Structures are given as structure tokens and as C-alpha cells.
Image 1 (cartoon, helix red, strand yellow):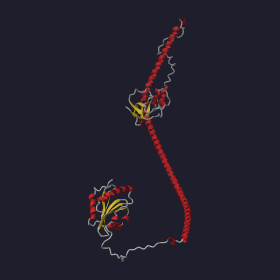
Image 2 (cartoon, rainbow, N blue to C red; image 1 turned 90 degrees about the vertical axis):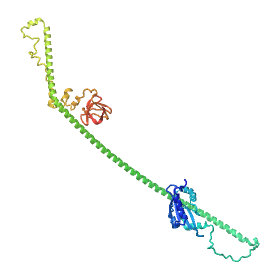
Image 3 (cartoon, rainbow, N blue to C red; image 1 turned 90 degrees about the horizontal axis):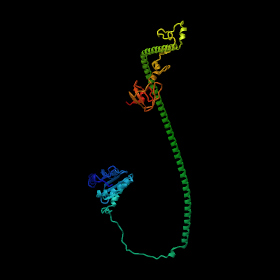
Image 4 (tube, rainbow, N blue to C red; image 1 turned 180 degrees about the horizontal axis):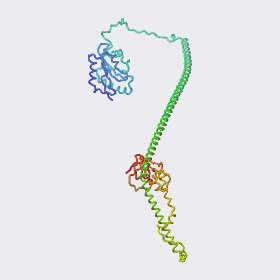
Length: 460
């Protein structure tokens, strides 16, 4: 992207003009605004190069304008420094390199431009030397002195012919070449010996380097293995701790569930006992009227049995009288007369025969044993010591669907005969909310009994 010189154009030109003018400001440093390509004024100063160098950063791209005096003639010269620190990323350097031309066109009037990367490139003496070399002349009329070149002589030439045979000594030549050959052989032998020595030394160094590298690899491998072992050990310990925590949590949960189950069982037992006490109280209140009705029914039954026996006896006597021949009556005139149709009030004989009368006596047994559920036993014939007889006596005919209905959320198995079993989604009919935790109703099989209320939900 191109450099942005318009956003801060006024401030940039003001700082640059302060350096160009005769003001005390002799340098100004410009930099980029954060990570953008907008150029701004960073700092200005009056104390020359050393103060300016303190503002240059090794990780930034900056531009500086400096005012110095030309050593040749004492006039002011203006130097532009394009600074790219050594720590500046390569990608940023490429962008800044394209911006330099635009900055040079913007800061017109500089006599010399220097590209710098470190403080060694902006030493004051070197800058002054470059300014002096860039001047139109490297001398001053005020400093030059007259030089003495001596007397001027006539220009001439002197030539002498040489004789090669007289100047060359053959023996010295042969000795020279022999000596040169010997030295060449010595140098060759020395070179070969040096090469062999270098090869041996290089091989030794290579072996030492390989041994050191192998040792370093072994140490690194052992360190890595030790680290892996420590990590595995830490993982195993963490896993064991997690398992132990899970076991403890599961054990606490099981204990809590067992305690809750025991509490629910105790509440259920308490509810059952309360229900049984209520049933016992109701039965005890209804027992006298039931006993009276039962006694009347038994007396009526005995009376009907007696009448039936008397009727059978009359029919038997009448049949015997009809089948007997006439002469038999004459022979038996002296015998006591036998009335074929005795009156029921004067006939004492049929009374001893009905011996089944003692059978109704078991009705006194429930009173002697104080059976709480005597009514249920009487309705379902004789059933000895049935603790849940009341509940069984209620298992009669399934109702026609009247009353509340509930849908089973979970499966439930009856703990005894007073409860009912059901499966999820079964419909419980004729629901009676007898207690906060226990209800009564009919399951799909037509059985009536109690069940926990939190296992179902009402649908009516």
C-alpha cells in the first residue's frame, strides 16, 4: 500500500520547515502511526546528531531530516536519513522501500540522502564526510597554500641497447630451475602430508561429533522416556483418584438411595398400618349390625330346614299309608293309632334329627380370636388368619370405568396381596387418593389394591 502523507501533511511540513529555517530546531524524526501507513511527526530537537540518534529504534521504519554545516565552506546542508532498523520484519522492509521515493519527493530541498540500519551508519563524523564529498569543490581558497615544485628542466630521452646473451647466466638459470623444481616437489609433499593430516583430523572430528551427537540423542531419549514415565504415572494416579472419587460418589449415592428406599418403605408401612387401623375401626363399628343380621339369617335358615324336614316326613307317612293293604288296618286296631298327618306343633320326633344346627357356631370364632378382618372372611368363606382379607374381599368386579384414571409411569411389583402390580403405560381405573403417598385402584387385570402415587400420573 502507498504511504499516507495527506492525513498529517500540515504537521509534517511544519516540522520540516523548522529544520530548513534558521530556527533552533536542527533535526526532526518522522515515523508510521502504529501499524498503518500514515506518516506522522515523532520528535524534533535542537542538540544535533547525538540527540537525534536516541529517537531511532531498531524495530521501526523511520525518516529523519538533519541540518549540518558543510566542512568546506561553512554553509548549512540538509541531510535526509531513511532508517530501517535491523529488527524490522522483511515484509515491512519491502513496503518501506517503496515509500522512500514518495518521502523524498515530499521533503524537497535535502542535499544528501543516507540509508541507515544501525547507529554506526549515523555517526556525525561520517555524515560530515559525506556532506563534504558531495560539495561542488573539496577545497577552500582560504585554506589552500602555494606549493614549491622546484626548477623546471628540459625534457629529454636516454636509450641503451641490451644484449641478452651477456646478461643471462646459463648456470644460474639451470640452478634456479632445479631449485624451483625441488621446492615444488617439497611443496607438493607438504601439501599431500597436510591433506592426509587434515583428512585424519576431519575423520577424528567427525567421529567425535557423531559420538557427541549419539550421546546427546541417548540423553534426550532417556529424558523423554523419563518424562513419559512420569506423565503415565501422573495419569495413572489421576485415573486412580478419579476412580476412587467415582466409587465414593457411587457408594454415597447407593447409601442415600438405600436410606431413601428405607424411608419410603417405612412411610409405606406406616401408611398401611394407618389404613389397616382405619379398616379395623370401621369393621369393628360395622360388626355388631353384621352379627345381628347373620344370626337372624341363620335362625331363618334353621326354621326353613325344619319345615322342609317336616314336609318330607309328612310325605313319607302319607306314602306309607296309601301302600298298606286294608286287612292290615284290622290287625292293627289294638296298636296305638298312628296319625298320618300329625300337626307340626305336636310332633316331637323330627326335632332331634336336624343335627347340622351346631354348624353355625363358627361365627363365634372371629369374636374369640379378635380377627380384625372377620367381615372379609365371612364373605369369602372361611379363610384362617388372612392378614389382608379386607383387601381381598374388595377384589370383586372391576368397575365400569367411572371415577379417576391414572397412567403408569414406571413398572411396579406388588409387595403383598394388598397391593397391585402394573407396567409402564398401564391404565389404573377408579383411583381413590386415600393418602398423600398411596392410592387405591384397579389394574388392567381387574385386581384392586394400593400402589405408590409417585409411580403414576392422573389423566382425567
